[in-house]
Image (cartoon, rainbow, N blue to C red; front, side, top):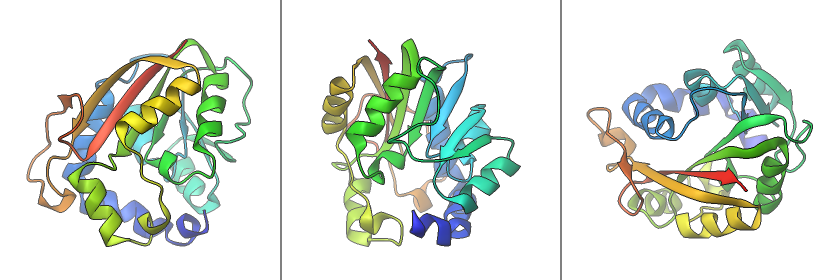
Length: 205
């Protein structure tokens, strides 16, 4: 968390510098995002995704990031995904975008996500696929943010989701080039295995 609290401006600037990659990620997420209902983003960061996707609630451990998210009209609480400060059966959907590779206990975060979701509530995860060209690139690069990340493969994360009582999965992928090489907004494709950024959607069962 200290890394994100210290380098929050650098983090936020990435989305301006790699705007077409960011917009491509949004398009993939929109393929599975519910069009209505109360949503929560776990690890909301500076609110880049929540604000663009119409997600009104967020939780974030970094106070500096949370402050910027608040300026983007997100109702942010300071806290961690392992212990969500919300009642059970509160939300229609929850989004965890990139965050899952930075949490201390991914299994607990997913179980907490299931707890705060209503029955048949939707979970949406966006990840840099460990097994993709982009996952391999980031692991070699060891940026200030990703050097301590635990990357997941899609099948590995799907197995974890099943242990947290999620099922009925769907997948979309995008970023078929390195972010700084993308020349236009990419159209998301179903499945995984080609794109560097993969969206996994599941339902609480």
